[in-house]
Image: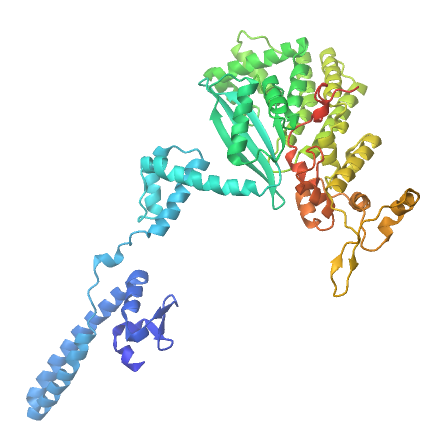
Length: 619
């Protein structure tokens, strides 16, 4: 190692072995194989450039001091004689080559300039940029904004932003094809899927239709938008069926659609149920929306809502009224809140508007009194009615939010939610309000809930999903007979999916063969049926399924906020028959398995053979 330490670069490194040296600043190992110091010098330039500057200053100072010492020595040699002069000349001759070798190379500005970004890193940052634009719905022109370009340069000056044309014509389409291929492979592995679809018209009078797919992979609920497209043709059932069929074929899911969830429009119901022959179910939240909207459209309640709406429109439209409302809220020590406006197609927006009016009642009344607009004011009795109406609608809003979740299973909650709302309304009937409009609203809600959800426990898909949810099981049913019938259907589905194990015998050499089947006399049939499961090697599918369902129902309930899919993942090996029934595509779509509960999002509808009757109408 002594021959390698002649260079001044070794002032910053310590030799570890014949092939490596350790930097004294960052402790990184640098290759010095073959005695080369280029790697060490390059490391200092890129990682510790100030070390070279300090080294240069020390060398310059040392050279000046050496020159002064040589001059003084020469002067002394003149007085001492020829012998002394010869000695100093020899010393100077020996020192000169060493000083020349230790002279460092001059540092240039290029050593402090960042190198261009590597192509691989450029590609990674480009991908992140395109994902950000797609995820946050940013315009392509964001790459031309001065502020964004300055921000990007501050993060990494070496990164070159692509143009908006490059993003829109090349990068985004490439990323779309990549993500689409990955998603197709993921959906292909799912044993069954559920579709949700809806149509709407934009502010520019353009009609759109979307199709969303819900499925399970690795015991996790997944939801992906398969397509969102313009519907230029008339919204006939035939045209809608053609579009849905096209999307299903493009994604290869036409043979594993467990259900399709839509609203109550007759065209989409006919397209899904009668033309495509898919298992159609109606949106639970949509049915709830119909119930509440009908209840608030009563004459007295609607007149009250129109009064609140006119006040909300005036305050939101008038800058003077908005400023005066904020001023009154500050004077009364309240939080500054704006009035909310309702939307005709969303009943909960009406609830939010009335609830906000109640929250800012005092400053709102004072504002209207000071400005004296030509608007009808609410009487004290009407304010009381408004508050009672909000109290009645609050549980319906909570159920709507609960059933609209996309991250958790919701189909198994439909029976509980419907029964819970019925009990709340029944309680208000037993404790009636003093205001006749409120009493009429409560009576209407009770009748409409019974009409739409009275027989919800007999809806096969919802009943079986609820039974097999480890959070609810049979405890979600109000009528015990409905629970027992559901248990029988689940056992039948698991029995149908299970493969019976035939008795076997072993020949010499350990080879297992099935015995030849022999006709059983009729007088032995009853005995054979009763003792079949007692013989070794024979397994009765019905008995096994019954034992598993009994073991499942005997287990304690898990917390209401726990994930039922995670529970089934842990116990997949314990309840194999029910797990197998989920994967068996030969099962009728009504024979739901434990995991199929995740597909039953936001609906409450009869099974296909009950389609002719009104949804959830009691007998």
